[in-house]
Length: 515
Image: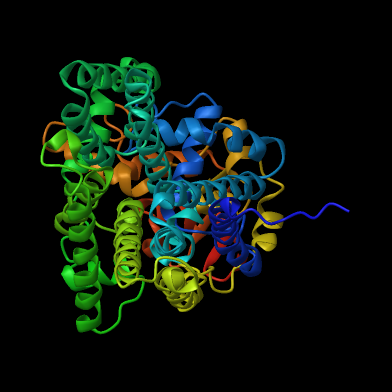
């Protein structure tokens, strides 16, 4: 009878796979448990899905409506918008969120693969903290931009691992992924600059040129058509509106560190965690520099540390900042943490070996102990990571809103997510009417128009006038109460109260129908 022995070579792969499974469950289970897989998950989440719904209906960003980001998210949302059209908007959004949970799983797996050479403690610390930490889960339970950007950068780092064997292919693949990242969020310019320097140092000017050309070509393919159709509007929405943003100036260092930690605790705790992060970045850079004196001999760990440093510093200094922004830095911080833990375990093992214990369980004890400690630390972090942010809408029953709005083909909604919760967004677009994709973004661009930029939505049309026009054409409206706190202008509120009557309500949401 044949006896099969377990092959230890499979352990790293099994560990990484297990962490990927944990990452998927950490992202998906809270949505299922709270019943919000297809419901409210935040303002930006609804905007991104609505951009896909509008694009599917032939309404183009920049030309027909304001989108203060590159068009990648609208293109990515097309298949999910199609699901929303064929089934329901909650079904389309639910499918999109499952996709993003899988994207977070993929990011965890790629982190594990990048850290594999540093041993089990490194994988557990780096990929593990990403799998369960709220710094990652807050964005990867929703339709957000940072998980896509992170996935593209991690894929580029994986591609560049083979630069010695096939430098041209590695550089080209990395450039394509980073070009795609820029099609989603301008923050991608920071990792692009770091990776470009890495390519120049390691591969020389010719391959740097190839890197820049391939990346630019990727951006041109995705963004070029939108720019050709509305060059001035796209420049205003994507560049000028972002440069003018100041919605994070009131959030100081302690607040931002709290968002990085996923918990707004005592300031001294947050500064302590910040100091640990700095030490990890410095340690990773030191490990990379130990590869050789010449810059082209520096290890990939140095460049991971540079990515973490540049992105974290930009986030802490940015005039625009929200609670999910730390996710832009999460992959690089996880890599630095993994390298630090792995290097520490390796140093302890060498010390054991130098004392004459070169084999047996004693030589492996330091790594095993650090792996066990890492797993122990991940438990409370994971418990915190299961906390759902933002919380479900209090008292809102989506089924009631869906039933109240169902008889009407043209339904106005103040915010895109209200159209999703009431399952009226795709139906309204299909019948040639809809609502503003991004109310706040439209008002941002409208403010720029006073300084010579284009008006928010077509010549001479303000966000307020657009709301009034859409309300006048609507058969019903889904709004929040009080209306002024949920984005409606004073004149739009007047139009609502004079031409519509309240038909149903659920929590702070109301459905009004035309008199």
